[in-house]
Structures are given as C-alpha cells and as structure tokens.
Length: 104
View 1: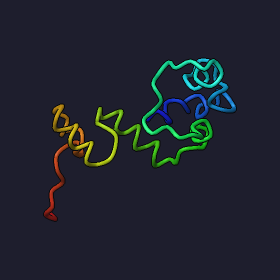
View 2: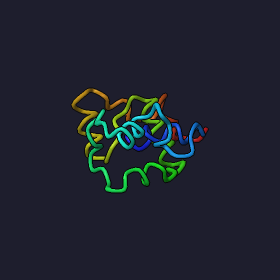
View 3: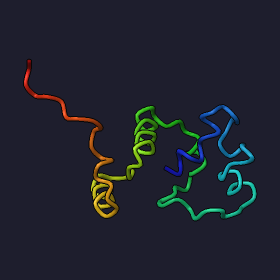
View 4: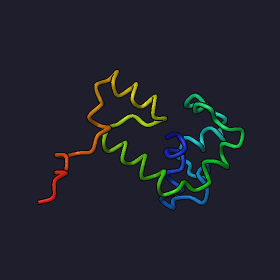
C-alpha cells in the first residue's frame, strides 16, 4: 500500500519520478531526510527504485477494490483475521444477491 501511495504523483504524470514530487512523502524522506512516517514494513534497500517501477494493473485494481470496499489488504490469512476481528467479513464477499445456480 505504501508503494501505491508514494507512487501517486508518478502514476498521475505529475513528475518524472515519485521522489521529484515536492509534496509527496517520498520526496520528504529522500531529499530532506525527514522521517514523516516510519519505514514501510519490510522496506527494501532500493525502495526508491521499487516505488518508481510501475505496478501491474492487477496490483492497482486489487488495491483500489479493497479501498472502495473498505476491506483489509494483505496476505489471505492476515486479511481474514483482521476482517473477523473488526467485523469486516462482509467486505470480503461479492456484493449483491448470490446468482441462481439453476438454469431457467
């Protein structure tokens, strides 16, 4: 998720690199050496390069879907655990009435 957020300006063509967007958190961390946030969990040594590498459309769609549904995002076991803990199981299921399995 942090990669997605820090790459917003890049995806929107507001800058050539994510760290060049002066209003972004990556710029703050790279050029001003400010820790406005803790390092993202498991941050890579080459984090800036990783953020600037385009995400696949599948990754972006998954993130956006989970944001829109207000569903936890992570590995399957963690997602289920958090959904149960916070009463979000309905966010993991398809919306609407289940399709009729019988053919008419």
